[in-house]
Length: 102
Image (tube, rainbow, N blue to C red):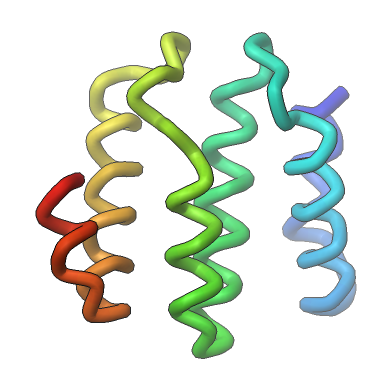
């Protein structure tokens, strides 16, 4: 069901509707192991939306909420990409200490 709903994200008429849909799907997938791949993709999409609107702090916060290292269903490539995004957003936020820890 989550995968099916994710198909509608690109079809959303406005950015506000798209944001609300992504946030709702993130809430629905939170804490559920069997949809962790979708959760990580939704989190990246949400962070990208925040960053595109100039809210780098919020984007960084969204990405930091996810402990991607614990997601077993993701490939190494996806985990690495997610961590790279976390580091990039920390550097954009000028949070050098957290970037170094990651």
